[in-house]
Image (cartoon, rainbow, N blue to C red):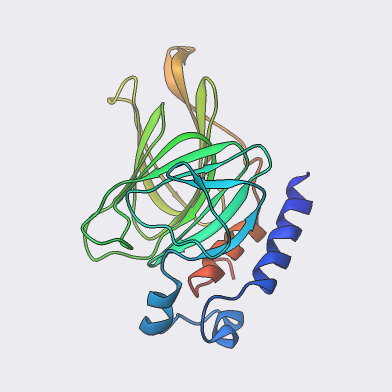
Length: 224
């Protein structure tokens, strides 16, 4: 399935399943009221194929919390909201949500393999940490797309500011501040031309996916 057709399926799925009260407010891009946000916490917004949480296959009525391991099999796809954050996992992905002080307040994510799209609400203090086999990133109130590949991680700061460091050489760091996918990076397991970090082009994700993620928590991306 191409990125465009996958995104079209995602949009259709979101229209079919509206777990949030006040869908008119979502369509207008308004912030969700606290009651609606609490109601959406941990809820599946779109699901296709086989998706497992903590090793058990789930359906669209499942609830995902901090501390959970989420896996999508070869035909799997899931989009879900946890508090003020929303996440999309493509097929063949594994994501561990770090245990936190509250079941619906995300403090950390570990992308073991595969592809993650994510948007985060603004926090008064503390970053969310995303860890893959080759990069560690600190995120606050922004959007990103991450692919953990066999020898590297593709990391796009879709908008906002993200500070990233190579796991192999933490002294190699980069901070990206972008509005619209302006500075993707590759983080290698072994150095290329003397560096573990290289600039990359925008690839394998699109605006409609980020818009669907933000819509799941009642927001719009900044270019809207």
